[in-house]
Image 1: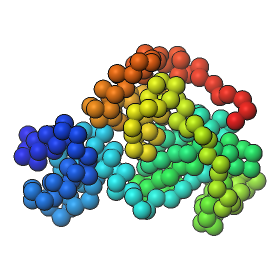
Image 2 (image 1 turned 135 degrees about the vertical axis):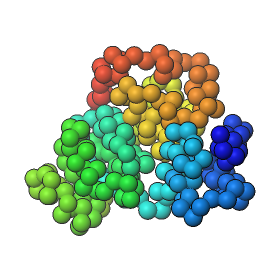
Image 3 (image 1 turned 30 degrees about the horizontal axis):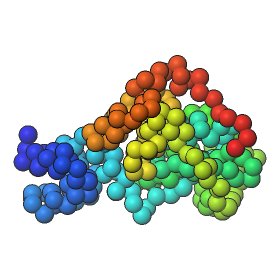
Image 4 (image 1 turned 60 degrees about the vertical axis):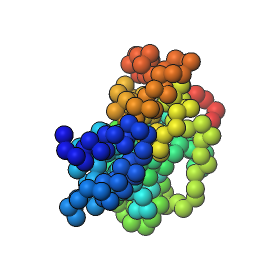
Amino acid sequence: MTKLTRVAALLLLGGVTVVGVMTYARQNVKLEPEFADPISAAAAIDAPSWVKLLAAEASAKGKTQRLTVSMGCFWRGEAVIGAFHGVVATTPGLLDNREVVDADFDPSVVSYTELLKLILRGGVATQVFARTDQQLVEATSLVDASHVIRSDVAIAPDPAPKHSMRIRSMGGVEMTPIQATRVNAAARLGGDVTEFLSPAQIRAVNSSKDKHFSEVSPEMVSSESCHVGH
C-alpha cells in the first residue's frame, strides 16, 4: 500500500470527504500533473468505488448537460436512466401532462446521442424533449420527428423522487445526487447498493428500524409497479 493510499484510507475512515482527501493529497503528497483532476486523483490513491463515484461527480460540476424524456412510469424510468455511466443526477416529474425524467450528465463521459441511444435500448422513452436546437437535430436522427418536441419548459418535479430507494428505507440516509441516483437504480434493478455508499452510510442504512435494502428480494424489485395519479 502506498503512502497516499494509506493516508486516503485513514482520512476516509475518519469521515473526511473525498474533496478533503484530494486536497490533502495535493498538498502533502507529490502528484503528477495528470492527477490534478478529481477522477485521476481518486484513481491515483486506489480509492474504493464510492470515492471514485464522488470524484466523478466533482469532476462533472459546472459542465453537465440535461436530457429529458417521457415514459409510461417515471419510477422505472428514473431507475433505468440512473444506472447509465455518465449520468450524475436524475429528477422525475411532469411535463405537458407526461411523466418525464430529467437526466443531468457529464458530456465528457457520455454524449447526448450516446446516452439517448442507451435510454432507447432500455425501453423507457416514449417521447424526447429536446432542450437545445442541437439536441433536436441529434434526437431526430435517432427517433421519428413526431416523437421529439423542442421545449425549454422546466418539469414539475415529483415531490417524492428516488422511489425504489425510499421504499427500502434508505431515503433518510444523506447522499450526494450521484449516490442517490445510483443507489435508487441498484435498488430497483437488483444491484448491490453498497458499492455506492461509504462505510458510515452503510451503517446508517443498517441501523434503520425499518426494513432495509438487504431484505428486499429481486422478486420484489421486479414486481414493483407504478402508482396511478401522480
